[in-house]
Amino acid sequence: MTEKRKFSFIKLVYIGVISICVLLVFLMYNTTDQKRFSCEELLPTKTNNEEHGHLEEHPSQQDAQNKTKGKLSDSKRFEDKVRVFFNWGNRTSSPLAETYKTKGKLPSSKATRHNLIDILKWGDDEASLTEAAEKMIKEIRNSWDKNNYAKVITLRHISPSAQRPDFQAVKNLGSLLYVHAALWQGDYVRITVVKKLGVPVTNALCVLWYSTDEKAKPHFVKAVVRDLQSYNFKNACGYIKCVLKVGESKEEEIPLHVSLVDGTDIGSGLKVTLPIENRLIHKNVEKSIGIAKPADNKTESGQVVEFTVCIPTMYRFGNAGMLVEKLEMSRLLGAGRVVLYKTSVKPNVEAVLKMYMREFAAGRETLEVVTHSWKQPPITLHYWGQIAAIDDCLYRYKWNSRFMVFTDLDEFIIPLHHATWSELIADREKLSPGNAAFMIRSSVMTKDHSSPAKGFEAEALHYYSEVLRLTERDDYIWPPIQKSKVIINPAKIESIGVHHVYEGYGLTDIVPPDQAMLFHYRLPTTEACKRVKDTRVVDKYGQKLVVRLKAAWAKLKDVSSGWTPTNKTNKAKCQVKLSGQKQIAEDTYENIDKFNLIL
Image 1: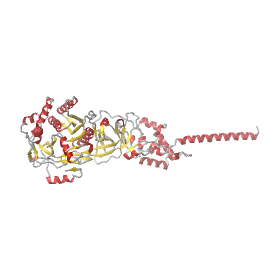
Image 2: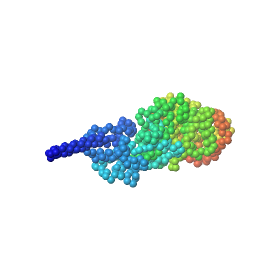
Image 3: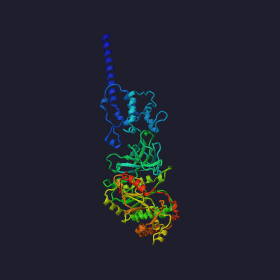
Image 4: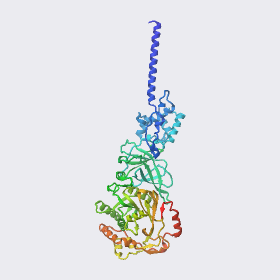
């Protein structure tokens, strides 16, 4: 072979090798190019649901502009690092991601759970972020809550404990201190909470779980936190709203559990998890009337009744005689259910409660008596968490109640021209249709000395009855709002206090005291302590009450009443000094518009 031919052959070999190299480089580049993604993929795309406070997971489509030839930009390198670290989109996990999964948390010595710069630099000395990459980090941080970047953190479902306390402590989540229960309310879940008064909670997210699978993906939504009345205590009762997905209507679409997390630090894990306690009632609810179907009277929260009475809270309570009388008077007035919140009671009271529940379960009793444990958290709350108990009762039983009555054990709402609450409400509705609530004004039946009704002296002592024993009343009827109690239509109420409605969708009818009155059996409260004889309650219900008390105590033969007569009180020691009826009336009428009251 001549020198010239050798040179031509070598030249062809070189050209072939170079061509093959160029082809390989071209193929490798195209393969890499197909794996590119934009920062828009890292942050979920907006959906219409975001307008309702929802944070949806929707992977964006790859932007066509990213499929251009050339070297990967620094921003793309940054995106690749984030993508690989969090194992986004089922790509191969990096050692960093595997370490995160096995340890369950990021090492706090070199990285904080919410600082992406430190996360990327951890274990990677060569990581150097350009100005463009740092700009993207800032962009992600600013979008953390808005676009739910937190979903890249793995959250594993943990079922709530069946032995959880009545109030579960919440740590490191703003001003939240305790949570009590989560209840389904149609288009949202409502959680009763205890928090620091007036301190907003801006970083909480609700995590809604629709499956118990450990790999199940939850739904995130902003937690809306509100205070209820506090009576100037530093700790307030409140609630959290967790809005559900738009269009949820099937039972399987109602969450099983709800958790709370810190939206700025998802990696710190679930703060608390609660079951949705009343979720099964969903299938029985007729949303058009806001109540469970009357045809199905065996729902999770009991039968549908016309009136549910809520009584918070029993603390160190041992007066079984008062309890029996409250239950039997409630029955005569039209109650189908009485709900009591129990912090601590004596054995005799426990025996009474068990008797009523046993008789109802056996079908021998028409009045449903329900108790809820109410062990207080170790902080100071107004009247043992009375506001929270009222809120819980409202939302736990609103679907099974056409009306709800909120009174204490020593109070009775008495219709003066009707036999029952039902007849009273029907007539008030004719005068002013569509009311959200009915406010009943209060007067005190004084128990500083005995004044038994004529003909009932023996029964008053035998059955430990305050209604039969006390017939003298303070000659004063408190103005609206002050010491009043309410009967509500729960479908029209958002929240209530002890004496009036806070938020509702209608007016409150102030019932004239000659139509109905709240008779409060207690020590006198007015300075003058002027008394009037008032036998209207015993005249109307005395005979029927004796029959009911006799039947009840026949089943409680070995149970102590716990009742002791009150010693006579010196009239000069009456506790509350009135500033004058005129001034009280003026203060009350200033609040008429504020509370949507009608006279």
